[in-house]
Length: 402
Image 1: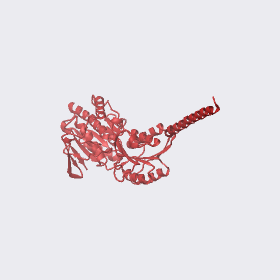
Image 2: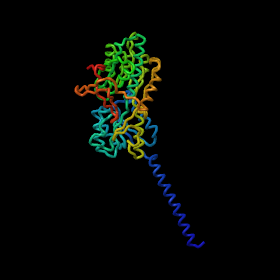
Image 3: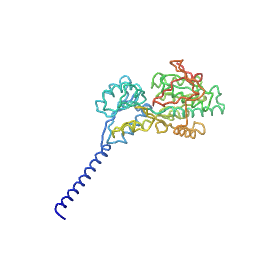
Image 4: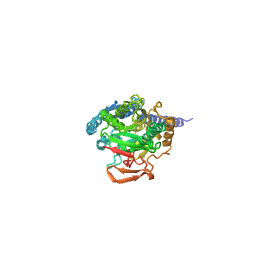
């Protein structure tokens, strides 16, 4: 072989090895970009771990810390009033967070303002409704679970217990009354207690419901007092959309000669009300929040990364993607067949076979009596937004007491 031919072969070999080395280096760089990347994630909470609402978010935060150990540093702001959230946002921006989660509806306006000022930070606002409003910001997102699904199943469980009481002769049809402690007359709350009530009515068509508002999310004494008032007014099932264990305590402390049972929200209250607690439901925040962290770590768009019903920069889901969960079933107290019924309904939601907001009912907007809806035509909740939109009071069967 001539010298020039040997030289050509050597040059070709060297080029091939160089190409392999470059390719290997690029692969290591690209694949390592996700595994070696590190971000800071901020959390703003309206409460702390002692209240059920905040505790559910804290569980998602802990999952993030465990799943992304070494990649994610978390910074947390607890007990932040909605009207002072700006100071918490300033602190987290100053800490150079790459992703900030806010967890209360009242934070949304300020969070979006800061998203506009800091386009390199991703802001994710739970329960809010303003992601797709002008101005549209690519780094501002909203999310929430389809909690009406869990509320409805909780209502069915309550209805099965109510039906049992009727069949045993412990109450009459006229005494089939539900009491509900509600925080505010928001669509989120109205949608929730309507879904709960329709679940009850699927088992006991004669049931009626009384609603009383607290105008606060977390006041133990007030919530307990209202529960006691509802019980004194003849309600035999009590539920709530508020954040303390006051209603559970009120039910458990009721004279045992009276039939009173309780359905919780956000966490099981079996330890507080072992003889009256039936079940409850909650939003599981982990699928969205862990997904958002993965998206930011990998430099991908959140809405294309998280599984759910996407509308612009808003995303939600229910049992289908584990965004909603049922709480503990107290089989010591619930009616026979409850667990099987719950499993059946969960599968129904997963397969998109259930339409909750439907029936021979007329709904009236509490702020505009001329705005009415006929539910014989049905209403699809969370179709276009993760936050609930049903805001009508069912005429003649739900009474709101001020």
